[in-house]
Image (cartoon, rainbow, N blue to C red):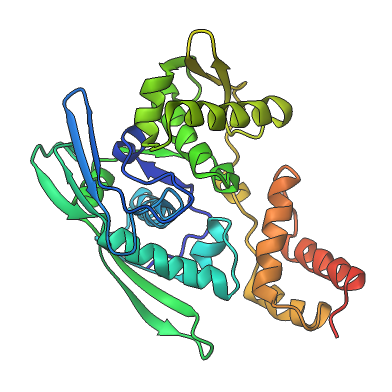
Length: 328
């Protein structure tokens, strides 16, 4: 049972290293074959398409919860049960009906995508054919059809990585990156640079291969250039600055100045159920769960300031939201 809402996001190192997930913004039905060094990887889509970088949020959430439980000395297993709403909020997804439908589609792609690989996790060298998720079940649905409790069974391959602690902590702003290619670039930087660490350079052909992009070399370079220009202007890319040297056809990831990691309680303020109930009175007509998701995004954007009273801060924000835009 997952009940550690502020668990630090963690991803398995194997899928950060190699292009298991699609970076396409459209349904991707392309079979993939990838070799790099001794690593061999083949990925086959389901009738719903390949699992995407955004679908990976499900694995990140499950891995994060299991690692937090392990660090507390709790017993864990491959079967993870959690509230769909908690996952949606923790991964910066919408909590409206569309958010739940997208989550259900992600489960289908994760379970349906077939992986063939010799990539080792947990020290076990073998050729595996598997899905990233063995199964996903909706335990309870609300009266309007939204998922409430969900149960996921992770594959042996993923669970072996967790037990061997072959995982890395991700910056929570990873979930603020909307472009799949941005997320994939961050994963590569996090895996190869470390944090803090030293700059790492890749040739354009190598970085495209690691991203798993099916674009032409020219189009991939254009997409990459846009991301680099946006980061130069806004420094939005978490933990690393990204630079494109067009003359040398190289991409360089440089760790930004090291900052002390926030305490676990700073990852997200804990807002009580009592405060959620009071929010119904403070902001009548609003979906209080949607308000909570919006507030957490607002708090994140403002620099994650420490709150002496998270409930009071949340309710004050709800009151202002209602005053600006009352629902009748």
